[in-house]
Image 1 (cartoon, helix red, strand yellow):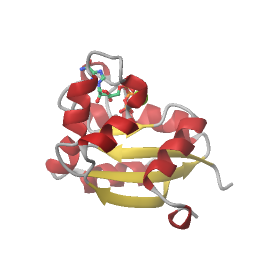
Image 2: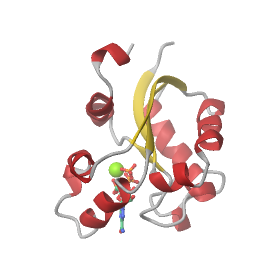
Image 3: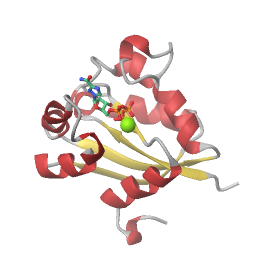
Length: 139
Ligand code: RTP
Ligand code: MG
């Protein structure tokens, strides 16, 4: 079965500490297919657009600064039940609360620098994937 899709970013802390390969290996070993992949560095403006849903939250300015502090790796992933299964693979937002063996438990350093993003719905997965990838890059 072709499966459903989700969107992820390896965040600046995890990219900067050289864990892109290890995290990507965990993603593939968990059964997700990589359908699109891009290394890029978000400007503060673009990071702010991506996280606009959080703009009234107290952590928004810090989040925008952090997400534009270094390169990220964006990916569209495919698997059956992709959104929910990927959120399980990455673990809770705060690594202190994340289950053993999850990507955030292993690689995150704080609630903000938490290694990886995962879309929270099929609708947002489509919106977020289209934020980074053109129609030609999505197949
Ligand atoms: P994400 O969207 O990145 O996958 O993370 P999430 O759903 O688990 O968490 P969300 O509530 O959407 O928050 C987005 C990101 O903002 C940072 N954050 N900082 N300082 C804080 O209290 C705080 N809370 C959230 C994290 O980088 C979080 O992933
Ligand atoms: Mg979120």
